[in-house]
Length: 349
Image (tube, rainbow, N blue to C red):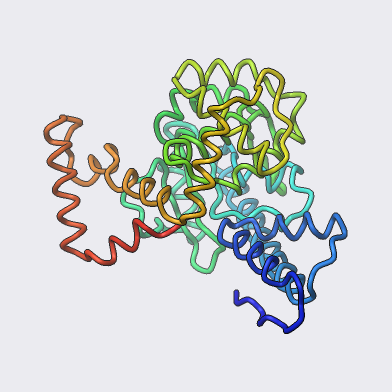
């Protein structure tokens, strides 16, 4: 979506242009529009028109996601499968989104019981879904429908390691609750597990803690979840789980970023300190430079142990893993050296 041309004599236009540019880059433009609209902020007319159009487009897209989710859950129910919804798929139907167009989504995340994956795929194929291209190894199975807003990702666990160790699918299923999806029924994560998974996904699985990235969209989601479910969230459980897996610092840093960037009130027992502030400074420096966090993240993903095992079957043997990493580097550079360099420097979402 193009920016409007700058108008002469329009003070503050450059600042608004920059703010909207950052919001669109981080996929939070719809939330920015909702916040400004709800507060009655005066905006330059062209900036308001741009944000309004982006929000309208996202609303239409989310309604399409909602329709396809209901269609899929109804089809799964007919063969005796009740899926577990999490992330955006849950928020589309649980009433926590005050505005249907406020949350940008890339896909629908659902989990199914062990042993029902093949039947789930058959059901989705009957609806026109096929395995999404370009994902040789992921912790899920992504299936896309031609012309759809995005894929449905079918999971057996709630993410890649270490997520299953911290929050297993078995525990998530046991603590889940029933929810209506159109005329069908599904399950969804309990509030504590929603918050725990949100932190694990953004800070750990997406490597934002390790690379000092700015996951603003996920920080906004976390704040929204806590605002809606705050009294039901078991922070003692979350703290114990994260600490028990060496992720206490990731939790505290992530909560601190949510406090600083989205206004989250820190839960009791999570005071600020020098370490979270230092992490915030690294995040801001990386974002200002535009590439360090994304270079480190992309390299981590490209040379991850599980990903390389899927490609080269190194069997987790240290020497074979090292050889696989060298082999993969040579393969990438030989295939498209300049393209690879551009990809690892490119700022992600």
